[in-house]
Image 1 (cartoon, helix red, strand yellow):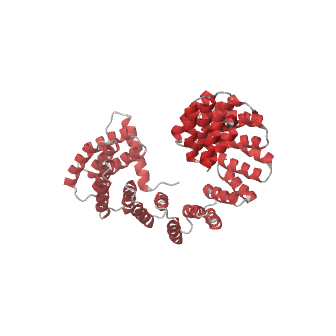
Image 2: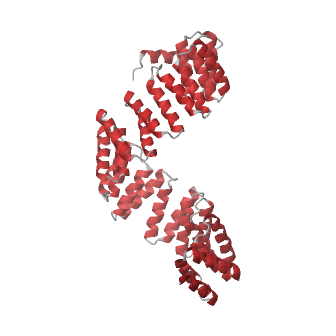
Length: 464
């Protein structure tokens, strides 16, 4: 690739500057060279080097406003807002109509949460700037900060009018439509955009996603096809089209597309996992398992891959093999609540009740505080002959699911079993008031309690 004249000279200036830093000499650079050097350091996050270059640049060019503005930019980046404001005031005394001073002032207002003031500054800058697209983008972001998605959308669309290759603006425009819950509007916008930019693969891809949201699968597929025509290496379009084909149960076609992505880019665990799922739906179990294994080899942290292998063996009632693979998954990520839940259910099927209870407990501790987990753990504790622990578990679950009938019936049953008759009666009344039909829980899980005369009378009084 050949560098343009300015880019070539700028790179020479940067190399010359860095060579100077390693020596004891001080060389002269014009202000434009300093601007390039400072921008380079800011863009690469080398703020300390940028500050040093600003100091040196101002020592050689003390009256150059653009260097002072870069000093302001660094101060804003470092959150030294008061210093930045003071410096901006001085700059405005020298150059009152500089659009960059207004942009930097807007940045300070934005950092302070004063987004309306930031918008006013940017509107002023818009009348003066030579780069209106950049200002429209900044305005769009300010509107986003205040959840004004309608105005934000308009600004990002103006960016696209000025630069149709500004994909950041394109994505932001679509996100605004999503926030506004206006799928039809986003489709109209994308179709208008594509009328003028018919080979924009990103827009076709986004259009496909919007049709997918409406479950218009045929139009979604057509849009992804146009994205692929526009760029036959666009992996995202192949993946999305394949996912639609899966929904339509066209598994062989989906496999073809997922396989194409493997040849375009490095194999992804996700594509291999989907290929495995398609083969399993087609009844080709060996090929399914082969691809599941490839997926977890490619990405050992892919929880869906380990769960797919575990479920594969579980469906075949090969519970010991399923347990072996869920244990492998837990060895890799012992904080994954999905793994522990699956571990608990497989151990239950194997009759390993202590391990099953441990799995439900670990799943809850890892973050899955679902009602199902609490109930399964409580039931397992009773199976293990630990009603006191079951009682503690159920009382804790009420903190997450207050007045839940399934919990209340179990609590009533455990209270009666532990001879806390008054508490059991109170819980039973609460459960029946909540949902009398769920009294079958008491009948199935606590038959000895359900047969008590007093309990039958209470239940009967709510069935009338």
